[in-house]
Length: 416
Image 1 (tube, rainbow, N blue to C red):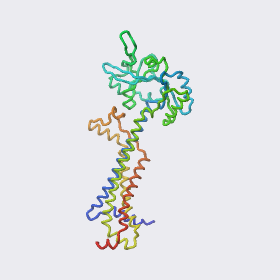
Image 2 (image 1 turned 30 degrees about the horizontal axis):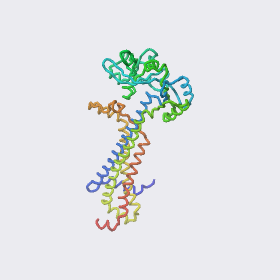
Image 3 (image 1 turned 90 degrees about the vertical axis):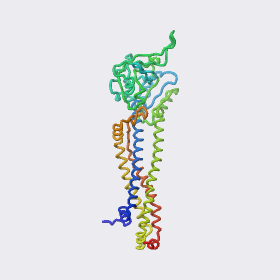
Image 4 (image 1 turned 180 degrees about the vertical axis):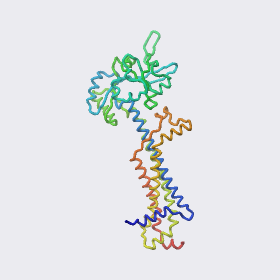
């Protein structure tokens, strides 16, 4: 059985033992807790940002296509042929036509501005998960000439509309009559209600049959463009560019990263800023180790002198106090990582309990885009946070440990 190095034994002894007043042990405990809390807070913050980024991406891609292209001035000609050509690409998994425009929905005396999307229900499943997001009703009811509409849950609540209700859709593009310009309007029957989990869509997006939208927006049966789903969502922009160039150019291209670029850019900037800020908090907590070890070195200078008198090298003395500081960092970091993972895993439940007990809506969907607090724990990032804290703790031990190793035995014993 191998013997434990005496440097480690002494470091553990100093870590456990109290001084005459017990103050040094208290400071060591405070240092561990400080490091742990800082690590836990950084872990939770990054988990929330990661969860928000992941959930936002999934909800956006559940309701919108990965990429698309449309005519710049006129609707898309020969869309069936173009769709077949697009599907021949190995990196495109689906394509569907669409007609889009702006409108005003009216139910009773309540108006609501919306984006109108005309779709082919049979092809829509290739580019979105709209069917799986329906709380009630069916996309199959969006048949040409039926003038039925699918609306979001938040919009249904605002308009107080339900399945079977009749609502009026007003189009800004009017028609000229002897009485002046009259906006086009048409009565639609609610055929379905979907819930994407994002207020932007649940409140502001409605679906109708592509043929009905074509009549309203006067596209002569032609779609405005094609929406596509692709194998690699991060290659969506490149694929849309290649498709447009392949058809000779003259198209407006779009993809999920371009349409929602500000959301994801702000998330990444926020994540970077939070990492820097809370890394500084870890650094402040870690450098408590300097004061802790400085007091330990002063308290144990008699021990240091005796060890040096018995032949202990300066390197061994340095190792004793560096090991003690490293142990404070490792224990504190381990506590912080465990606490951070536990809080991150149960954060949604914690927030729900706070909202329920206080009666406050901490995450209003109309403000924060989503109305819950998702988290995503990424082991690699948690490991990086832990390694950063331990590395800073080791750096913080160097000055007091070197100071201890340079103490002269005779000077220390003179005052003992």
